Image (tube, rainbow, N blue to C red; front, side, top):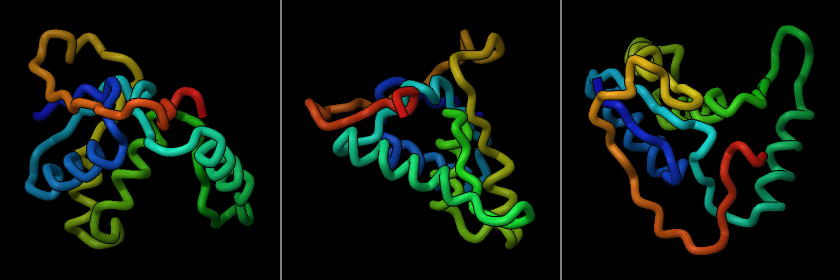
Length: 128
């Protein structure tokens, strides 16, 4: 199992890495999902997420966009996998687990970190 620390990691880079590893057959655990960074203008990103949350659709169908930090990350990773309706994408999606904070079972495990070189235009997921 690969454990990824999401603290100050760029969301797109982390998601593409996790999707590739899941397609190879690895189990992925992403920690500190609330501290992952999205690059870009803060106000634009907030407006886009609010717009997506308001478009719920009918009760049975929808795209439903969650407000939970871990589910936002998992949805981004899902977009980088093959269609989840097919076997390969579905199996890879089941191997990815996202957590807010660090659970006790992963405190002592070795973590993969991503460096962030962004200077000014970014927002953390917990601020959305």
